[in-house]
Length: 164
Image 1 (cartoon, rainbow, N blue to C red):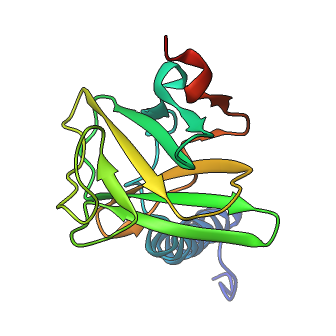
Image 2: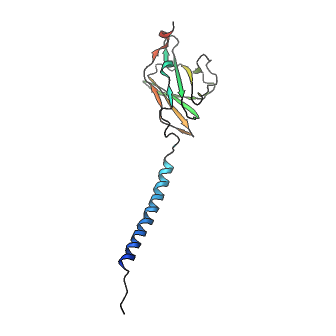
Image 3: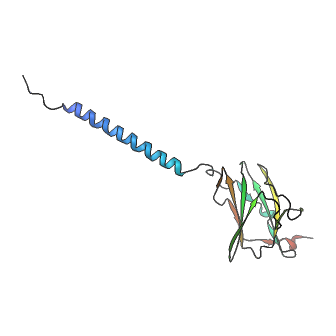
């Protein structure tokens, strides 16, 4: 009778392959959970769906007001963050807002309730008392998360020059 103390080569190879598959599965599960926790897809694919309408975005030198128009594409947003950037830094305005004495709807009154543009719609707003603004940026707020800047304007024409 032969002395059988070792495993055959086929059985040991099969055990090694099975062990590698189990280790890869465990590592994949851990890494997948870490990645899923760190990434939120709320903002993914929404870049550029909120834009300034440059035809209605201008600075009025007579009234010292900045007029800007925002078009919202096929996207649902909770609010918009408007960043007003000047040489000293930036200040943000949230839309919707109420009782803000520095923003109004176009042809509205300062301090009124300001609403978001509807999905696939647009609205024009006017702001005052922010000094000389170098640029304006808009960021959507989706599912409780502020997304990246969707659009910005760095140059403004003078609205007062366009009036007949």
